Structures are given as C-alpha cells and as structure tokens.
Amino acid sequence: SRGLGDVYKRQLYIQYVSATPATKADIISLQENLDRKLQQRKARETGICPIREELYAQCFDELIRQVTIQCIERGFLLVRVRNELRMTVEAYQSLYESSIAYGMRKALLAEQRRNDLETEMQDLENECSELQQSVSGLEGSIVDIEKEFAETKENLAHKHEEIVKEGKLRNKALKEELERLLSAVPPKDPDKKKK
Image (cartoon, rainbow, N blue to C red; front, top):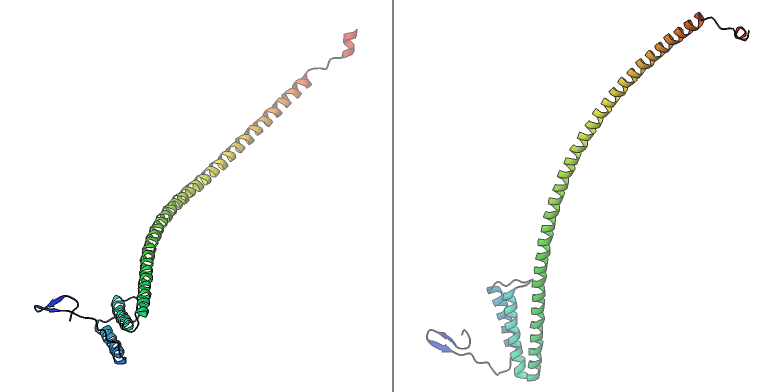
C-alpha cells in the first residue's frame, strides 16, 4: 500500500491504524524494518542525512502510535516531545544555514580585502621602485654637483693664488719704487727753515 487515498491499478487502497497493542515481535519487526530501509535508501550513518532523519521520524511516529494505544496521555506527551525536538532541529538548521551564509560573506570579504591589499602592496612596491630610481638620480646629481663644486673651488683657489701672487709682485714693485724715490730726494733739514 502507498498510503491514504492512493490509487494503484484502478483500485483504492486505504490504510487503517491498528488499535491492537504492539507486541515484542512488532517492536523487533519495526527495528528490522528501520534497519532494512536505512540500507535500501543508503542513508548515511553520521552527519546530516535527510533520508535517515525521515526514516527515524517515521519510526518515532510508529512508536508514538503504539504507546498511545496503551496510554493516551503518554502518547500526547511523546507528541509534544517530538514537536519540540522538530522545532529545535529546525532552529539549529536555520542557525546552521545563517552561519554558513555569514561564513561565505566573511570569506568573500576576506578575499576582496586580500585582493585590495595585494593591489595596494603592488602600488606601494611600484612607488618604492620609482622613489629608488629618483634617489639614484639625485645621488648621481649630488656626485656631479660635488665634482663641479670641487673643480670650481680649485679654479677659484688657483685664480686667488695668481691674484695674490700678482698683488705681492705689484706691492714689491711699488715698495721698491717708493724706496727708490725716497732715497733720491734729499731729506729737508728742519733747522734751515727757522733761519
């Protein structure tokens, strides 16, 4: 049978709930059925598996049915426990999905940040290279300026030396001329003027 109201080969099949209490053999049969269906549908033994979840839910519903036949209050309590467990699982699934989405967003942001940092690093490396070339050019300019300054200083020192030499020669010549002139003029006697 395929369930309530299913039509198969033009015949109507209706599945009724049995009102007879479950025996030990029924429980063993239910367990064997569960194990067989888990293997047939290739349910995973660990982790999240929708097939395993569905089969265990069906088994739990059957256990609730069997318990409810013997004691209605116990059956209603089991239904409340089942519903609470389903809500808890759904909350965990929602939390899991939102955490996966959050993790993906964070991973994408981290990837974008990494790409931005790599671009910034490349830009800074290019700028460093340009500045290094500028430093090399300026160091070359400094060497040229120092060389030019040394040459200019040497030229000025040489010219100064020549000017000093010429000045000394001129002074010497003027001194000799002055001495010659002074020695050629007779000294005036101050006593002659008084007479």
